[in-house]
Length: 251
Image 1 (cartoon, rainbow, N blue to C red):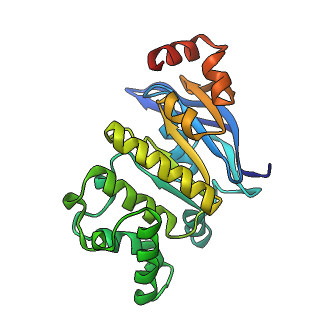
Image 2 (image 1 turned 120 degrees about the vertical axis):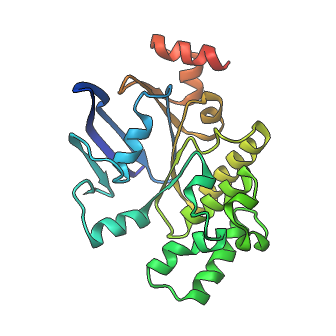
């Protein structure tokens, strides 16, 4: 398989009352083209910080992030804007990720309009995206507070698909939803990955979800990747003590 994303020796330290807290401790991993990779671990283990560094929402202390072989950490200006088209994120709380003053349709069209697409063309593409995520066209005129969490998350996925990204990072994208809706969103992501040839980085604490969706899984603990492999193998035969505790808490 061909590598899409290469993370090498990534390190990030935060300071609380001048005391250093190692959030990400020299981690390395790859995401392959067309792959769904799971990154699991308890809250505070460094998963979301890793995602923020990859998407330029946080700066690392050191390390490297390559997309298609090109270093991305130091991109600025036009090159950085191009990176945002290639990598998109879907967040935990979809309502919070949309501007409450704008409709879902406007939110989905925003990146297309920013790229210079004409309004009529962007609107047509927006309706195509709503079809992809199995939302009726009437949701284009709804505001975030007027729809359910699952419907809003589908709209957020549509927005992430708008610039035709190579990689979508889902940061706890189903954890705020009830179990039935979680299953629907997982099935949607699986379908989109297959049909669009997307790569997915699924960040969560739910091993059962990773088992259902991912080809590989990385287990993160205290800023380090402590175990990795095929989900079934990691779940059935965990090597590290932390992974055993994580598995026992779910199954």
